[in-house]
Length: 303
Image 1 (cartoon, rainbow, N blue to C red):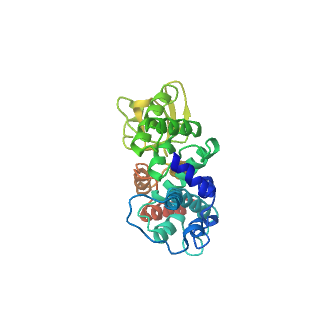
Image 2 (image 1 turned 120 degrees about the vertical axis):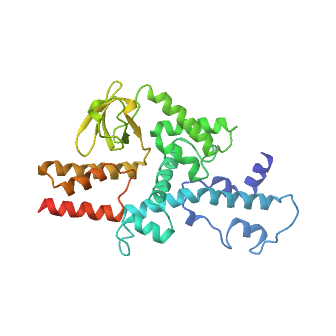
Image 3 (image 1 turned 90 degrees about the vertical axis):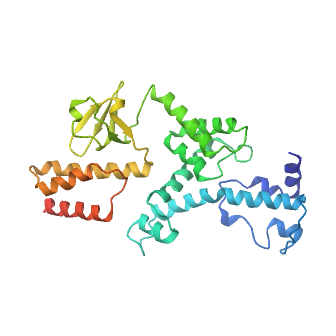
């Protein structure tokens, strides 16, 4: 604690830098706080003890590193929402894959969801006197909770970690406890994407592996809809895919696209075969071939 006080006295700006401040406003070149004391060419010593200036520099650089996932998520939101990728790429996902090397559609959305959680935490906690997440993996489990529960879960995780930054496994454990607690009142949420598990429900015969959207919550049951029909099921008949909010939104739109084919009466066997396959997707996106097949069906039946 004594070192932190010395660091603050050397340069209060270090302790005042918050997660809300854009990185491009933090001086890190020759006019940075380090240069004010040691110049632009800092000599690296082998002494294990850090000088007061080195302590300040270390804290400053750690803050930048800890902010990186948050800043990346905020940047991706701007790129997506303003469609700044449109001059070179057809979709946001293709842009992220080629520009940033993301191997899956999920990666940019993980950062976007993580940044949203941090924004939620910042509304309640002051970064100057509260411990906040330092990487995306710590935040990932929190995306499965409602905003109020996110704050509660994070604070519980910090306490369990001994008032230090908790590991992702600690956060995951806390999140699971809260989800189990909430199951007593509400085992699912409207808009969630789940997999159907028929068990002994005769109405669900032949629907094993199909995905559905939760459209209503009742007392011990919920209403779900597939591309073909609507069902009232119990908790044991569905299993959440735990998709991100963006992924759930995509699947909801896909469900609407598929349901439109119900208005066309008797479908060709080939069309029904394709739709039935899409009704058993296990991923929150369409492959290029799946997208082409769906486009062909939409063109055929909309003519």
